[in-house]
Amino acid sequence: MTFEPWAPELVLQKIESTVIESHLSDVYNAMATNNSVSEKNHALLYFESIIVSSAVANRLVNSAFMNLLTRMLKNIKSPMIKIRLCSVIGLLIRHSTVIENDYAESDVCGQLIETMKEKNEKVRRRAIAALGEYLFYAATQLDDEHADPVW
Image (tube, rainbow, N blue to C red):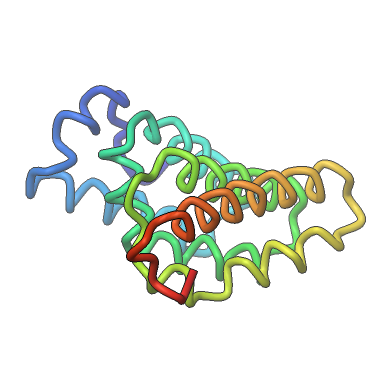
């Protein structure tokens, strides 16, 4: 791994500090670069392990990570990585309490629907689960009197 993993508790403790930026940048780079499937999988497993609270999820879901995850879901062919990507996206949405409207306007919904067409059954199941988390969050936004029509 090209970065030093932190315990999920440390990430939670530092999530509002400036110290976290460097760490998250290292994690982002490990996911974004042309590493082997195994290295990408390890980076995604680590990323998944730090999604332990709404504070962490809110910070990550409203960051450049979501564009990266969606782009990777579109471009990567490995079923193992696609499964992990869907899992991470679903967890981020499930644990988030505030998702900015930019995310609703992104292509994540369309990309999850495309991923549901994959041949691999596990990939399809994870894509359906992530889409369900997205739709549930969107439905909760529509319950609010001041809901933004983007949802």
